[in-house]
Length: 304
Ligand code: PAF
Image (cartoon, rainbow, N blue to C red; front, side):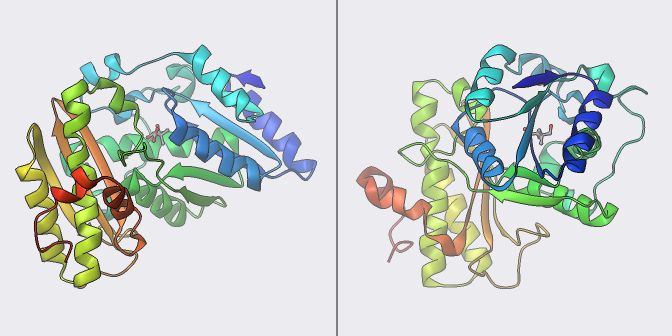
């Protein structure tokens, strides 16, 4: 695996690969890699002859300066994991290389899909994400780019950007990887203490409750209310939002459909967690079924 830190060098390598007939899969990351990222790399590896991953902690997507500084950085560890997963090039640029004219210059302003939910709770976040992803695409020149579905609104924002700007890149969403008890893998989980780790399962119960409620009816408000109730009743967890949305527009659908998303955000002991699940997939509910303590705490009536 080669490490490249200059945009021009990465573009030159991508152009050479393309003229030799290779297809290029691209996995953007901010490092602090876990099994969720590695499964995304595997998806890229399976479908492309070359794989580029980036490790860049993007300053413009952090609403709080303290969060940017506290973000874990261990490039040696991340590079070793990427190499093992079969990445050909890791792109690891400096901030000045990504933002040669300064952080606020030539930004990509995402559309309506970035409003609400994460967009509301993290002002400026999606503008920073869309801007850096556009710049990373311009450096890697990929055929396909891969993103985890756990950040479902980010996936919707990037898909809308690619459509809106007419970029010739296929966006591929990859399934959320969960711990054995159902908690979605996230770099933030490492910041949970033992109590927080346990309390965080309220998000899993809320999504399992939503999938179970969907099996019984299509009422968007009722499903969202059942999620809120589960989180509100959980100790040590403060709800930010619980909603049912269309995965493309991030607006509530008139009636819940199998591909509608139950989306939830909450603070657990000061750590902000998000998660989501397709209502019709009945996958999160299976974790709850395997753990009686999870299922027992879903309110009566939701699972019937
Ligand atoms: O999901 C992430 O890790 C980041 O938002 C991304 C897409 C790498 C942009 O910085």
